Image (cartoon, rainbow, N blue to C red; front, top):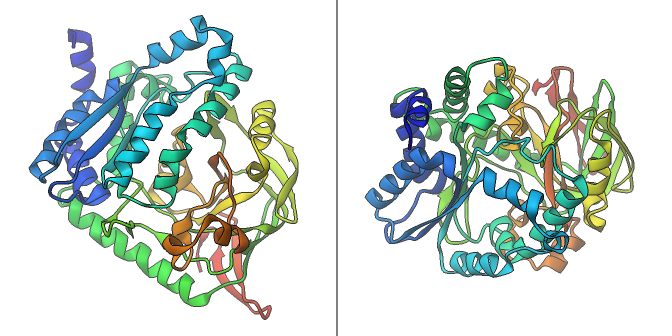
Length: 418
């Protein structure tokens, strides 16, 4: 690391960075003694990765294996790679990851790359590479979406990402601001971070228990630009905060998290809705998304910016035009209060109630771990190569729960829990 890089790293509070690493291991993963850990991260996040490895081994990790990505290496492919290479992906790597997860290896991902890295590249190549990667990743992804093992995602404030969020500030100032925002949203900005997460998980659990007790048949959304009814999958189950994986370990998959979520019925969604925040997707900012649903499927889609990319996403496969997740987030969430657009779904989805196109989570069904893919589909669960969250909630959003007999119960009023 050269001196300029050291100066930029110095802008990040080392105490809070260490807390984040500790929370990732003790709350995000709850890593068990003897359990291996597979960690993916951008090279820029090395200061955090080193601290994660330290806390993992202190917790008794068996073996910590790290796979690094690099922005310049990614760009080299798009600028110098042969055309046919964009229809290929490292399937052998993902098969190995799937084998590791089957063997009870925990999964930790650190995000932090420039969210607009590919904005200047050929969108057709980006779409082809994304689809090839999604197809190759399926063996490993299935282990994650089916919650076979404990997994977690956290973030590191890289220089390139910080300059996207704070473009008018010098690099060191932008990094310090993004670091503080990450630490605050991740609840590691104060002492007692692990205990703070236990209290936060308890609050989210209260929400999920209430919703699961209601057993709503559907949710009705109303507000500016939205008149949407989302049927809920048969036997759906609400999740939020900490969840228990099939290996018996209770973990927090996302840090930060403010949402409670479940599986919609992919064939019972109707009406129209407009996005409340831009979606940053593979180097393209997709803004003012407007869609119309009929019988669960998006039949009309527009965007004031990034519409071409949106339509390519919707054409990925049959399930890409249907919903795989519905999530409730109060407008007063800390990330919403920050007023920042992070250009990163891990954070932006926790600023507003949102939907996800594509693949559903099997854990969002009663006894989901015992259901076959065919049974999940029969109960309304969606299947797709993609899972993309986009925000629809705001301070004027009302949501009603609808029972099978037609009775309605207020769930949200003006963006807050009713």
